[in-house]
Amino acid sequence: MIELLTDINYLHWLAFGLLLLIAELAGTGGYFLWLGTSALIVGALMNFIPMSWQIQWMSFGALSLATTWLWWRRQLQSDTEDDAGRKLNQKESQLIGQEITLDSDVVIGTNRVKLGDTTWSARASQEMSAGSRVKVVQVDGIVLVIEPSE
Image 1 (tube, rainbow, N blue to C red):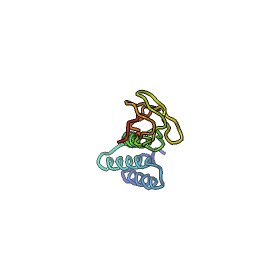
Image 2: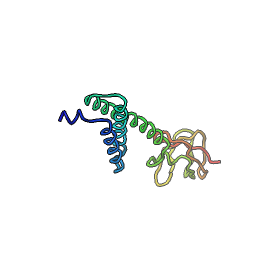
Image 3: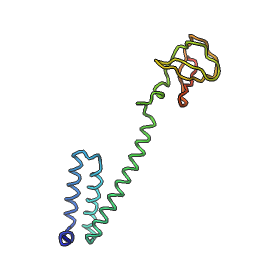
Image 4: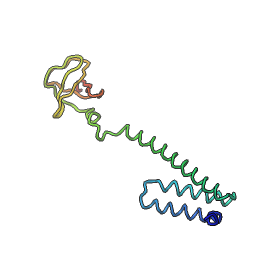
C-alpha cells in the first residue's frame, strides 16, 4: 500500500481533481467542486515542487478545508444579504405599503385595526376618524405603524 502511495505523481492528482469535478456535475451542491479544485492545485504544485506522499495528502486536506471554508463564508454572507431583502414568508413585511379603511376612530398611541382577516395592534402619531384611509408604513414587531394615505 505504501508503494502505491509513493508512486503517485502530479498526473494522478490532476486526474483525481478532474474526476471530482465530473462528480460535481451529478449535483453535489458544490462540495466536490472545492475538493476537485484542491486536487488540481496539489497536482499543479507537484509539477514544480517534489513532495512526499504525506505532504501531498496533507496539502490536499488543508486546501480542501481552506477552499470549502472560504466558499462557505462567501455563501453565508451572500445568503444573509439576500434574506434581508426577501419578503417571502414574512407576513408582517408584506403588509408595508398596504392601505386600509378605518372601522373606528384612531387616537394617538396604540389602537386596533382590521387588515385582511386579522386585527392588528397599530400605532398612530396622529388622530384619524373612522372611514379614513391609512397606510401601513412600518412594522415594529407585531405592531403596525400607520399614517394617513395621501
